[in-house]
Length: 550
Image (cartoon, rainbow, N blue to C red; front, side, top):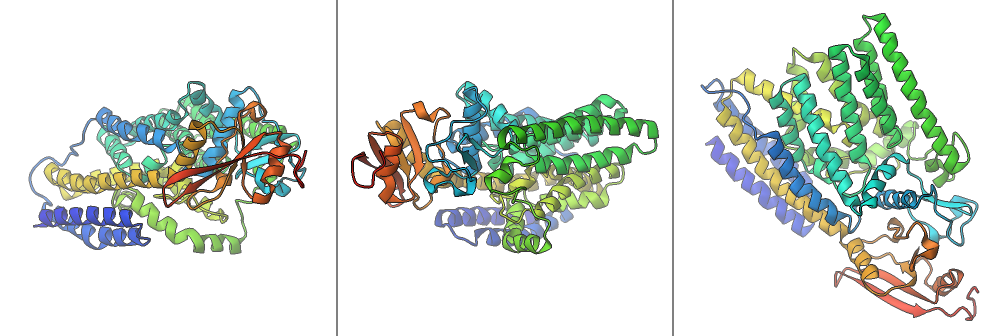
């Protein structure tokens, strides 16, 4: 009876998921969460309880690790290629442009004509989100770690492949941590929970920096646990080296992770004062090198050791994204907290957080290790409450991605503990996991549909300006689903490129801007949501016209 009910609920869930996705129903996720926790969870509980104590093996029956990762690759790699034809996040445009600058052999691009000494006063036609334009240089505000790695992809014309490859390696490391702490089966279960989570998929594609930072976080965690188990200082060196590199990728995230793992390392080795001092010394050494890298980067790009490009882009002395003002923090929580909570629940494999919480209560043999894992995720969660200027919610909060591996490990361990405590047969576990996997496969398909929809305007505009004989100045015009300042298509050496892309802010000044760039013609590119196609409108430049700039 319980199994039949679960089948019906699984079909109902998939039907609602697709109906809501196709109709763009705004309250879809609230409805799906209600279905999860009001109907599906009691049915799962009832079914497993009915099988409690029956005969049979309680070991998890899982597919081979290689098979799981290979199937994920078959989804993530082509989806990454497809997503990079368009745009999912404006930061991707900045990372991509900085990588192209590095590939050209320079640290910065030449400034666009019309740059102003004050970055906040940059003309709107020249302003691209996340970029810094001054009379001496033009560059995105992001740290160099990820763009340098992404440059390798551009060197072989496969930049879209870098993120999914790093994510696949992360799955191997995830399995290794699970095997180190618990068992090989727990490691595979954690990987299975990851690959069936839309949140993991969406952050494994495209050109965002989260995949690299997440891999460094996982390797640092693996080295930490190996160091605590073996007592070898080389593993602690590996931990701090990874965290130091992560500081060049996502500084704030890396700082939080470094704080949690350093405290954990010192606490767990406190009984041996000499060894603890050696661990601290290694941490200080790598921390100093990492901090020197950050300061040098600041000096090269802003001219000041203590002013970051993030601050320079906002015309401030400190990054405006973070705040320790309780009023601003509470305002951010009030604005984004509910959405973050809902999407974090819906983006993971069903009941992942519940299983992770169960581990914290039920674990007896590895209590220190599970609480270190919990601290990694909760530390990031708490730290990004001080990020009131916006959120990265898309099937989950992307700022938590570097710590989500800990949740998967805890949930996998919780599943194993529950099976042992209730003496559940393998067939019962397989039935429940199989039905829940059906829900996730449907959700993965909806995730791909969402990627296609969100990136379509950018994909169509990019294709139109690259496939047609367009030259001179191209003005990118805002239209439904398309934000021009988010999409920097310029080449690093824009002065010698056939096309220069600007933002179409004041239509009456198009001719003037085209004259400034000595272009013989200009084109306006926009997206038409009615025909779902890009529209190009061109004109010849008339630099002798009244008001035109020679």
